[in-house]
Image 1 (cartoon, rainbow, N blue to C red):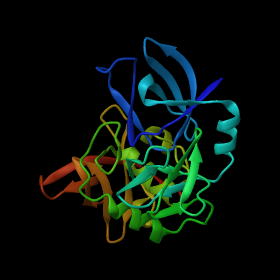
Image 2: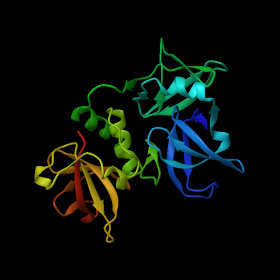
Image 3: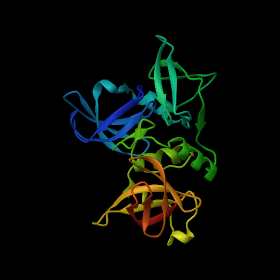
Image 4: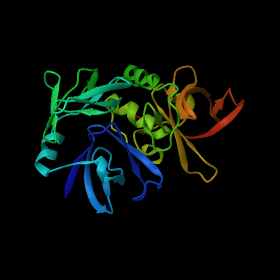
Length: 259
């Protein structure tokens, strides 16, 4: 099996090998992938972190050998903890913009290496391994306020509901799967909204009963979620009430406790 690493800021992952195909997710700088197939300038990949699959333009992936993959993968990842920062390629002194959630491994004296190159990073970062706290989750969630909604998005420049939840919890040291329907199978079931507490995940379904939306419960009967933009709305047993629209927009189906 071949492997690769993302050395660009944000790379779209598409459903099929075409620029016209639907974007299903994104890969951020430093994320590792397994390569499944190559076809006409496109590469079918699997994100090593969450096993999410799709197609990316071959020109946007840095291929690496198994030895380099194993070296990088053994380090606990650290994550960029500013909305936007820069990494400098020390070989040619070019800068690469990176966004919150981008991955940095084996940082020593502001320098790290990957795919045969040295890079410098002097911005804020947070490393996995510590016990997650509600304070961290809520602080990270609030940093994405007013980020525009983007189907398949996973960055401060555009994000979808499950990408938002996954990224917020990743930054807090908690592993979640990528899609809302997958996330709904994680954690502990909470029977009633009155029993829920801040940090719990709330899931919402459509008329067919499919899970199509997710958000994070806040104190005082509020929820933060990505709908048009990352926003805060009221929540009750019926669902999300959008005061701007003057109506309920999402029907509450399920509550899961992750923390």
